[in-house]
Image (tube, rainbow, N blue to C red):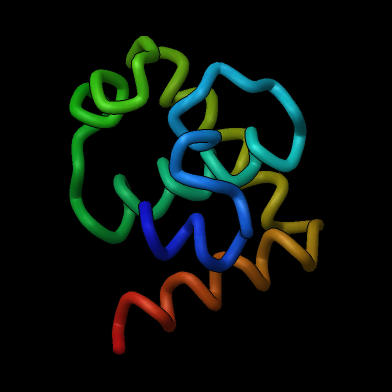
Length: 87
């Protein structure tokens, strides 16, 4: 969470909040993507951590995977987060 918060400049508190602001929602979705795809965390565990349902986590994953294909900013955030976590 720290890496996502640092790169996206969205506070950990905001990532855990119910905010639907686009910037916060995208950062939260990046957190879910990193958690599932790169850290091997289950959707169920992420759902519990974020206070959401597993279906919501699945939707976040699908949406962020599509957005990253066309949004250079989100794609850049993802690359920077991965690079930060591998150091």
